Image 1: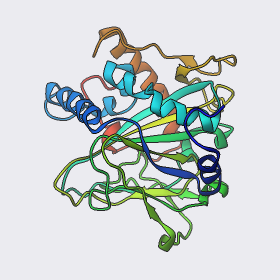
Image 2: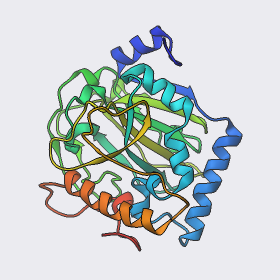
Image 3: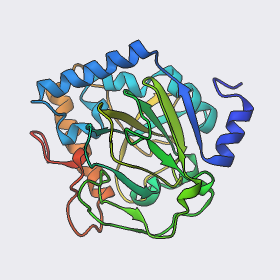
Image 4: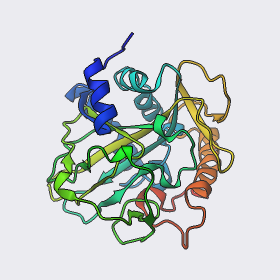
Length: 287
């Protein structure tokens, strides 16, 4: 029994590697979550500390709510089944009129996960995501390819942890802009070629990316963790992540530091230098 997506949409995802747009929140609900994010930023001095852009659901109760939204999980369940782990969450925030961008890449490249075909990213917009603001762009059908060579650039303005980019030719004539209104999401496959341009608009482009996988997937590189958001975990391949009792609860901060350091070691293994990406930047509680 399908939760949300009709069979035609599921077939479209299998063929193209993405779905967009899917309504999740009302505009008013999206504005409320944006306000809660920006209140957290204001409390931190004007910008969310780099470490807290990564796995914010471990330190903020409202981010924990976001990874459990029924409108997201129903669609994800239709694609990967009823048992769902949230392996990662990341805020990708482009300030207006800035040069930050995301190079063409495949998500799975450095994640260390097996069964990559069962990993899906939900990308939730909390502000307009348009060509002018630097919305995500995908090349349909590229998820059916194997993982292609990538090169680390650590380029200025590249929002990826290693500045990684695909090292083979890409025909951008076939690229599709994933335009989203606040409260809408896209879903994309872990091997999809995707990237985004800089934000040329007058508003922030705020995207919240959540990586979901079924519990049968396991980490091939080292110890790892994830949050069970639906169903059961019969495999126990990932250390369970507890929800924070309140925003910035000291035990939650300590756990976040430890798990983030462990995840960073997986993602940055073999890199020639530390990450310069905003969501990996040092902060008051960084390791």
